[in-house]
Image (cartoon, rainbow, N blue to C red; front, side, top):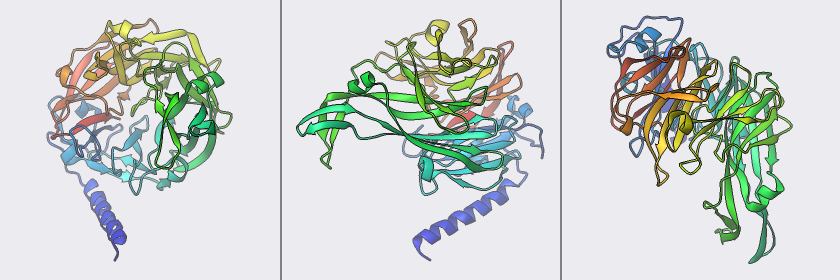
Length: 456
């Protein structure tokens, strides 16, 4: 047996053993787990690889009932008692609204881009449900993706092309940089790819000439009418008159970090066809709309899409929440929510947030210092209708780091957030969407270098 065959054989044996173990009725510490529940609350944790908090060692998951999640006398140790989700690095997890299914697209490695669906049965009992789906040929082994609406996933990839220039070296003139966009839709109920697209995307002539281009995309969401999909975008700027030659002799234009950032942008496609791409632009902020690992845009109760931005820093007035109108499929020029103004802080950076209904949201954020570094971790309840917000007081705020956070859970009027410093124990915190009341729930047992990153 060659090394590759041996690797797959050992991996298969491990999965069989995991499946057998996953069906056992053993309980985590402090948990007297029932065999069935109408609703499971799944907690995820990321393991360290080389450095504490890097989250690159893989992902563990464990599920409890809502009653257990709310009980401060219950202890949950996802790292010792949970199931390891298939993924070489941090898994990109999503869940059904009722908590009964967990979805994952494996991130990088030999199986990067493989979609898996699991039925949740409590504890470490997560059972494969439906076929695996290979997405790498369409959106790479490290796609960005979300559950864009219930039962539908959208995975995307944005790749900046080499700069186009005219003339002969060294007398060349920069022209533009385009972006190759790839996207697919996934049926989450009966796992399969249902549509795909690939196209070249360019910005306006003025933006292109100045060196601006889209370099990363993420956080797709389908609108209320289910006829458009909005994809968040990050924009970079090159210096059109400064370059170095790569090893292949191709000029590589230098980053221009001193110039103003681009105005916030979103890619709009028709849904479900994924055709007719266009870019919409907001002049309310120069932030990015692609986020990192947590959902950044939601369809509101009023049908408009509310979209968080990041990267503004102190000079840009901190993170904003913009609104894409359900009537125009474009930014509402008369609406902007400033987290800095709502909370009376400086340099807020939204790491994750959850739209909870009727204009109410819960925000996990850090603060950017004068050097541009994100510090501390905080939680606030915001009202998007009147532009206000209230910060909660939680332990260890200066030690908290929410940069890896993937999900804020919601079940009825209860919002669940996992709060624990890297390598230290913490708790699940539960917030009432109507009253704003905060309660401390189950204890989260941590391990050195690891962190809790999501509730589903």
